[in-house]
Image (tube, rainbow, N blue to C red; front, side, top):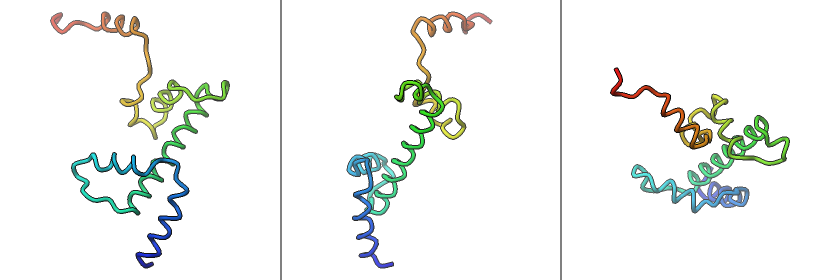
Length: 116
């Protein structure tokens, strides 16, 4: 396949992406390991990101309370990240929310480091 054909296909497929490719490129360039990004790599990364976000949202919606309210909430996303092995790597980014009083209570229950 010639370079011109690939460029034409990328140009046509750009219309089929929902995420702004300029933002994805900015995020990619924020890595010190990345110096140059060609259009094909940018398109594929943008499309893969879009598909991942769709999969996360759909899985969260199906397993969360979103079905009842026809909405997707943060707790649905956090629940999917915690319960699904596929999204386990997101638990640091999407932690379950807890009330401040519950957090303080859990801190009080932990043995202090000086109490051996």
